[in-house]
Amino acid sequence: MKRDDPDGNVLTGLAIGALLSVPVWMAVWLLVRYWLG
Figure 1 (cartoon, one colour):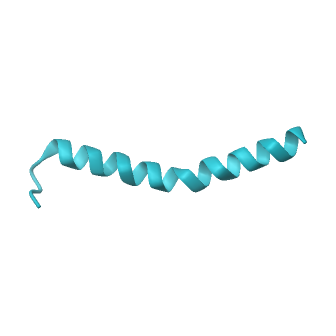
Figure 2: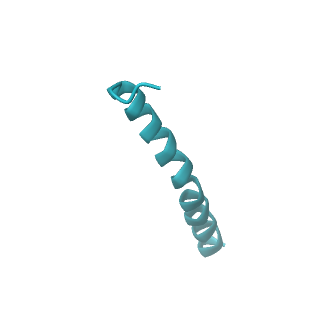
């Protein structure tokens, strides 16, 4: 894979960021749901 492809790096970064943020958003949603009861 080419390392000098800015678009590929951006897309990869966004994909990794989205995957890492999923557990955080799930935890926030569960906390809000529990708090609102």
